[in-house]
Length: 279
Image (cartoon, rainbow, N blue to C red; front, side, top):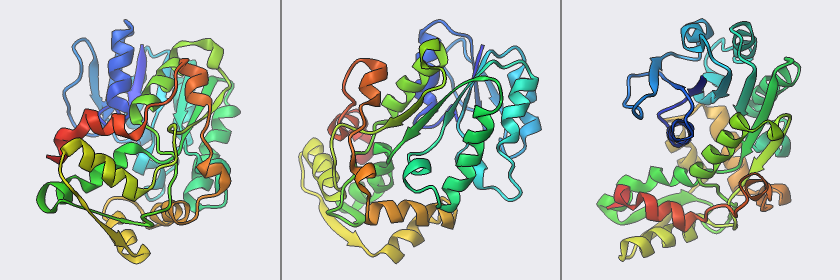
């Protein structure tokens, strides 16, 4: 049995579907109740309270660990989840980390994630670490303004990074959970092209068949919007990358193709699959 945390999100949902389709027994973990594929067990737990995950881990051979906001909760000790999994007999852990752990190691949110990575590597478990860059699905933040005002508002409109499709992250994670060849691997995941926010708006407009106005936010405006959903330190770390990506953050990684045997999906592909959210 494989336990998937964050199972109702943009990565966890397709990962759960892929594992179930491969014939695996899956337990989908999320904070709130949710619909899951037929045959998948659902379990509600808050990873900020690690002990609550114990019943979900009963009988599990592998764990996909997506920490999200749990990494930054007050008094959070996310690395404890590694020892907890090992104590319950889990043999393999695939950790969703961040590209910034290697490219911006001194960022506050990256230091915390690095500590989880280090704990996993020292655990004696089979492991793999997945480090995506920016997500294509961050464009969902524009859905309401596109629907109501035909506008995309974002900072740094002409500065781009190779955003990755969450479906590719899910497929790579599934491969790491199922295939021992990927044990001990650290996989940096990007899309196939550098794309700016203005170009992303253009891709949405093309899929809709109608024009969209691009409004460039200041950094302060963007941070105010982001901190409605994420901690301020994570907003600052993210905005640092968007404002001035390093050569490593603009690099097209070969790791999606190395694991899956195909090129990563472009942003336009993600838009085509999710265009209903913008209508």
